[in-house]
Length: 302
Image 1 (cartoon, rainbow, N blue to C red):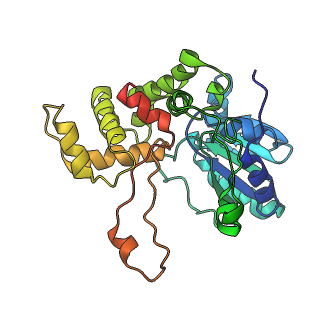
Image 2: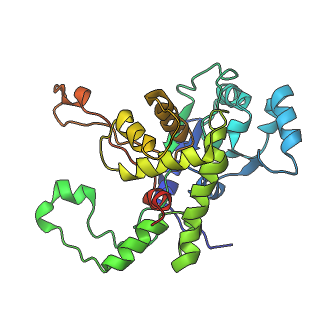
């Protein structure tokens, strides 16, 4: 096992647990949600543990409170496998009337909300976790901060010690914790493996709709070519159509985007304007991005 490196989100999680009953950590697979929560948890329930999965799922249906017993904060890993746990946690938070009771982690939004009857308002705080930044992986000095850019821009200095080849490697490797510390092909294989898992299984599990892996590859390749732009669904559809003999419509493209958002592969940058009264943000589209640049690199085969 690799030594755990504290993340920026560690401090955020500790702070939020002091003011709320439960924290939901969501984000893409392999970004370190479980490892981070384990550092703080008093006890852990692994819903996807193959040895106890059938028993856990049965209890989640018949007596979900049993699964919530344990030293707090109680970590429920991959909670979305049993959506009934959401309301059970909310109930326990209300009746225990104590802070920092539960940490829920999940790499997908439940495909159905039929068993979720309460929004969790006032009981849950959502915390989105992403792959590691270069500062977290200790490949950036952090000499320049956003706060300094606003507070004392005249005093900002910093030196970049990474050459172009190293920056290109880090872009293709990404911020996946498992890849940090590896060099060359071993590190790049992590991103390729993540991409293959998304294409062949994860995107279909997002909403229970079976999708052709070859068409998913076409979509992700087109999305990668349009990353950092405000390309419309129609632009992506036409790009896919050039390499796909079957007819495509924009609603199909939209369904791919929503499915990949559900498993946190895509994270679009929302339109923003500093003038709060301006209508510009209403007319501006979101900017297309993957949650990590390595996914785009893997999709393009670079």
